[in-house]
Length: 314
Image (tube, rainbow, N blue to C red):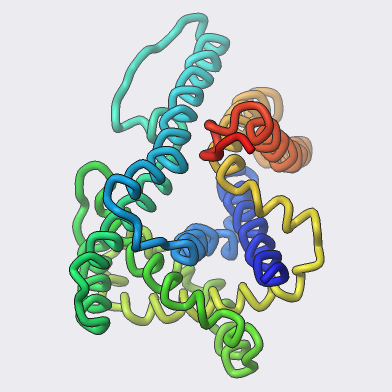
């Protein structure tokens, strides 16, 4: 069990590094394909820890403390941070609260909201005690609807994520067998490589491109196979202790890294010409510093203010 937890932590560590990569302007300009797998993979892995037997009040309390409250607090902190940056750049404050702003200047908050919706729907369906086949069909129909239709309050994001979360929940007991299967290794490698050409898993959450919606079942399969392959890689890297430790702090890193990157982006884009050698070097160093600093912030929160990362004092 310890070894199993370690390679899952390694997988989470790799995914959060991919997320920071996605949000670093340098890598966005390059257009690297593999990091876009990180978000679907996080929804998969979130399903590993699904606990459907909780009562409704207990379910809400747990998710409020572990997900929603920390996210809300970091949204406020991120908004204050953005206001300070605006003041330093323009000599005055700009107070505006609007959903057109990406989640109060902390754009990653959408993931937490979508995850909560997915968890809530799965919890509700578990109470209906439907036949497994019917439950699975409903979940994939919900996911498809989330991809087709834009909805208020990020509900479409939550529905799009629903099949990924559900598949993670179903696959979790089978993971030890899957990661040692050569057949799945080959299929997963092919699926993983296909991402280079079309970036299929990226459009899963949400997926509103008309030319891709009819490919939804194929895209789901590609995402699953890619995920199994990714876990096989993580298993090979399970003895890398720092990566395993990094993966234990994904929530804190997720909620804090954008503030560092926003600050660096403002400074670097003013000081260095875009795409110049110094610009590339500066953003590379900013990426490394952000990976380190957001981890340190998460560790400090764990010790002194665990509420901010959804934990309680030991």
